[in-house]
Image (cartoon, rainbow, N blue to C red; front, side, top):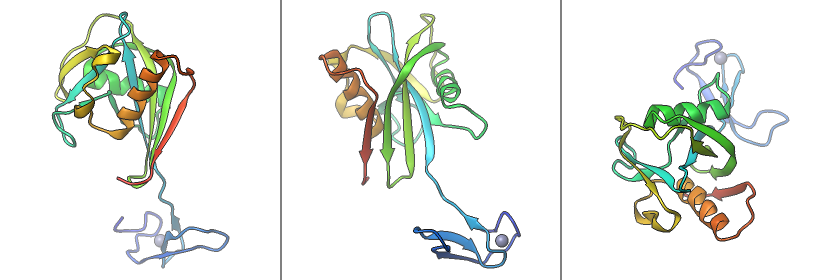
Length: 179
Ligand SMILES: [Zn+2]
C-alpha cells in the first residue's frame, strides 16, 4: 500500500492501536487502521465415476509443470462454493457438482486459507486451458506425490486417501506454520 485509501496520505506507521493486541498499519494523517487479513483460496477435489481424482498440470507459475487441484483466489463479491466452481471451469472447462466441504488448510506465513470442496463430474467433459496443460484422473494409489504443487493439495489428497482406507469422512483442518 502506497497511499491511504481514506485520505491519500503516504505516511504510515506500524503500531498496536488502542484496545488491540496486534501491530497494524495506521495512517498517521487520518488515523485509519488498514487491517491485513488472510486471503481465501477455493478449489475442488473432483472425482469421476471411477472414484479417480482430477489433477491438472500447472501451465502458469508458481510451481509451473507440477500437478495441482484446480483452485484460485476467491473474489470479493463471490461465495466460496461459487468461487470453487468458477476456478474449476476456468482451469478445466469441466462442469462439476459440489458434494461437501472436504478440507481447510491454513498457510500461516503466506497469509492464505484454502478451502477444498469435494465434487463430482456432471458430464464426462474437460478441456486443456492456458492454466492447465495436462489434465488426468488418478486412482487413489497412483497419486504423483513427488510432483504435487502445494502443501494444501497434499493435505486434501491425503485426507481423501485416508477416507478410502477407512478413516472418518469428516472435514479435515490442517495448518502449516512455516513455508
Ligand atoms: Zn489516511
